[in-house]
Image (cartoon, rainbow, N blue to C red; front, side, top):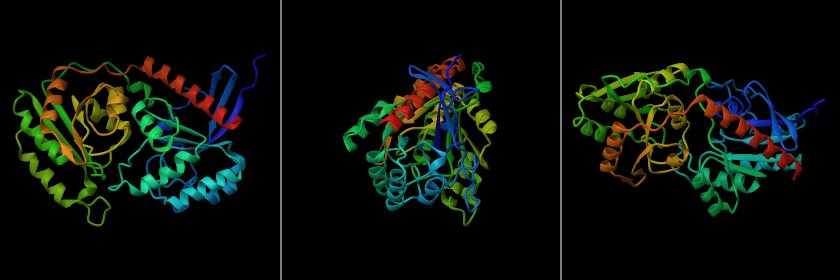
Amino acid sequence: MSAEPARIRVASVPRSHVYIQHLSPLNSSVSTLDSGPVSVVRLPDPVPADGTTVPGRWWPPAMLDPAWIADHHNEFDVFHIHFGFDALDPAQMAAVVDELDRHHKPLVYTLHDLRNPHHPDPGSHDEVLDILVPAADEVITLTPGAAQQISARWHREATVLPHPHVVPPARFAPREPQSDEFVVGVHAKSLRANTDPLPVIMTLLEAAADYPDMTIQINLHDEVFVPGNHWYNPDFGTTALALSRHPYARVLVHDYYSDDQLWDYLSGLSVSVLPYRFGTHSGWLEACHDLGTTVIAPSCGFYAEQQDCFTYDFGEDRFDADSLKQALAQAYSARPAAATWPDRREQRIFLAEQHAALYSRALNA
């Protein structure tokens, strides 16, 4: 008879984000390790006390609270932080770490963002990282470049594990042959702090004149036009709408896409250009890779280490328009290989095994 799998209960912050969902084996929680089978069970996200939710129901993350840890510490074996601490100050994060230590619960931290894309200034995020990274029993990140920065800044050796697939298995399919229109998408979304789409858009519109079939599609969320909304930005909204008169531009204003709408949108693009002045890694890039949509990414962060893509020189203090035009020319004539579901499935099994092994190591340290 086969041995019963060792069971590890993980409080993931959050649980319902697609990244965390795709760290589990398909149709099972059991991973096979050299030491035997291990079943990783992740706790569901608690519903926030104030009822505030976004799709996925994990925001704000109720687990990131010393009181929650004190009340529920007997329900989990490992505490794993991914996202969701944007609003926590250093004292609050220190209190979370102290409460975990009080109950002898190992902390695992996956460092997705060396620079928070929602914060215009890096100071508060850096202060929280200065607490999290040294305190974690295990540190994970997504790329070798990010691991090198973690080593240089905190003298910690991070385990590098790739980003899992984003789109569901049924969405993996060969790309349709190129249509009569070469569509280059710039998704401004709601203009989060690291996004600066206007210089990118204007350069692409200028370059589009050199191609016989190119359209620059500009997408933004309708909340930028809603007074009192956190993302209210009528100046950019008005500028973007005016671009609809440009012969090579298409401007779409809409609410947040559902997952299916987003996959349809990305599948309809020839190229997606990421207009980020700063950042580290990108789930958007991974979704494009899953769907076979070419990406042009900025030189900041470690996007080019995540997946094959074309790059241009863009950062907080620089923008090289010629490098963007060159990347566009490369993307027009060549398409990086798209992901296949068999490859992504094998990667998902690998990621599940690696996390199970890492949790076991943290518990046995």
